[in-house]
Structure formats: structure tokens, C-alpha cells
Amino acid sequence: MVASLLTILAVVAVGVPLVMFLVQDRLLFFPQPLSDVQRAQVGGKEVLLDAEGVRLHAWHLPGEPLILYFGGNAEEVSWMLREGRRNAPGAGWLLVNYRGYGGSQGAPSAKNISADALRWHDHARDALQAKAIVVFGRSLGSGAAVHVAANRPVRGAILVTPFDSLTEVAKHHYPFLPVSLLLRHRFDPVELAPQVRAPLLCIAAARDEVIPSAHARRLYDAWGGEKRWIELENAGHNSTDGVPGFWQAINAFLKQ
Image (cartoon, rainbow, N blue to C red):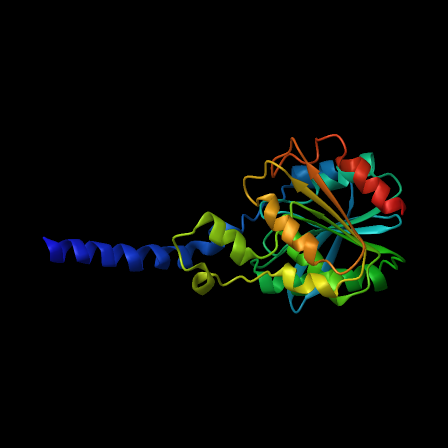
């Protein structure tokens, strides 16, 4: 009886972490397709970029400053084109679909999201001739936005429900697992934040059930440049945009 119990415990102790290791891509990334109907409804200009044989896709709306947008882990970003037109008039947008999302080929990973983010910045600077680029990262996209801000000159950074480290967020949700050993996708914007001098607008959600605002605060505290903190009291992780003050804060930041 004791031997059988020990065997069961051993199987659970090994099996659960192994399963989590194998399925972590499905837990972290939720690629969203782009239908022909969606494409027709968006009415924006599509931009394609080659990344060593992989086709990357984004949406472009001309204007200044140009906002380079990186969305969440379950977001096809075309919806933000409509929101941007309505709520931030005059600003330009380059809305990036990660690999496997929208019209982009391939499969997402932290490594290629970071590398592609720099490609999109350089395309905006060189091909689109953007004079002022502001990076905008939402949730997972905050990792890409901070990576760009740490490696390229940008006019500013807007981070919405951001995180300090994927490892730390995973530990919050799975405290019973050796997350540091299991996690293949490493995003640690808190390590890059001290070297960034661009101004920051950080918007956190007080009722964030996915990335508790304490993680956003640690990233904010580590930021090396001028910064402003806003915590939306009545917002959850996916409801920031509808809370009064969200777009007002963004527009005020863009006008600085």
C-alpha cells in the first residue's frame, strides 16, 4: 500500500511538470486567424514584411507620432485600428500581428516576437519614414515594446497591464511547479527597464486577474526614464479600454 502510494506520488510529481512543459505554448499563445470578412471590414492598409523567409503582417494608418502596437496573447490587432482612429485622432498606427496571428506566418515564441519587434521598428523608421515612434505594448506585448525601447530610440512607451517577468507571473499562477526550470519562453522586461530613458505611461488594472498590478508596479519602479503611473480602479485585465480616463491619459501622453 505504501509502495503504491509512493508510486502514484512519483508519477504525479514527474508527470504534471512534464505535461506543463509540453503544453506551455498552448497556455501562453492563442493565435487568432484573420478572415476575409474581417480584412474587408478593417479598411486599413496591410503591410507585409519578410523575416528570413517568414511573412509578417501588420496594419498601417499614417500619422504622427507613429504608434507601434504589440497586442495581447489572444489578440488579432486589426480592431485597434478602428479604436485608434476614433480615440487618438491624428496619430499613426502600425499594428503588429505576431507569427501565427492574423496574416503572419510561422509560430510565435518570445525569441521571434522580440526579433520581429525590432524589424517592425526599423521598417517604420526606414520604409514608412516615421519621424517619431511610440511603442505601445498590451499584456504580452509589453515585453516586445520594452525590448524595442531598450534597443532603439523611441519617443515614448505606453504599457497597458504589463508584467515584470513571465517567470514571475507564471510562479503566481502555478506556485506548485518549478517554473524557472520549465519555462522555455523568457520575457524579462524588468531587466531591460533601467536602461530605457524614453518617457513611460504605465496603465495598470486594479482588478487584473491575469497579471496582478504588483507585477506592473515592479516594472514601473525599474524604469529608467520619466514615468507616469495610472491604476484604473474598476478595470480588469481585458476591460481597461472602456474605463473613463484610459484614452484621455494616452492622448495627454502623446501630446507631451
